[in-house]
Image (cartoon, rainbow, N blue to C red; front, top):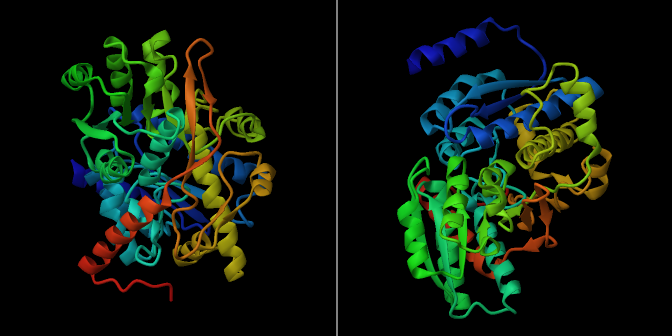
Length: 425
């Protein structure tokens, strides 16, 4: 069946006319236990490119062509989708899965195609001297762990000495990413740290929450996705764990994570790296995309947290394409040119406002040495009565004294294992 599916995709592409356009694959997952997050991200990602085509005639005079391939959040299918779409002239891949990202890093690097694993994937890919074709700006999971701890420090007058912090995490490469950082931070700040794994897809968590009830940690952090998040929040409510002491990563902070628990989810917190608030681009998408029947989905996700994250990812791709077109003096860029644009990317408040997305993310610039951006995020808190997320902090920076050595060590190990000479030439 998998071979037949791959052949069918290949036949469809072979039958398609050759177009001189900007090809952006969307490795989506609209099915399975993680679809609640995958659908709005893909909707936002695709709708923004459609808006650019409808409003601006594309980017730099070139139309954008989206090639969607369903992965079901399955790593093997994600690799199959990559192989089936890369020959289309794919400019950049946004895998939306840490597992798929890990598998694609050596493949895409060999093929000369950049990867943008925005806020996920291999954290040490921030070191562009080793991971030349991988970018994870504006923030990564080790940043997220540090930012969460910084928020807890602020909540406790600057000291976590003697506190107990538990991590409930998806038992996968994604969920395990913050553990080494939290271990280092526990040594630095004197808190007791314990990690509790939840197996895929995350519907069975009673034993973990019974352990939390017995051990009574002061705080619980969560690295979850899909159905795991809403189950965890409901289980926390069942044992009456204080929601204001429960903090999720940015993939554990969407409306669909908290709504199933009703009022019981009130006060739950999560990190976020893409902003909320008024964004004129949403009205443009409604009138120029959704109302014309051109939306990627049914329109119900427009404006929610994960939809905005898809918009943000697409906007960053747009800015990188514009930069690449300027560097190379051509509009129909290649993947290698796209990589150059991503490494020279500059994101300013003025440009985000021009595009109808004021404050959707932080200002930052990318360089060879830093493919990961500024490493900042805000904390948001759920207001169940008004069914809204309220941002309760400014952008918080991660602890570079802890994160930088971890990135250096991990990237150096990868370079040694794969015969890579680090550098920017």
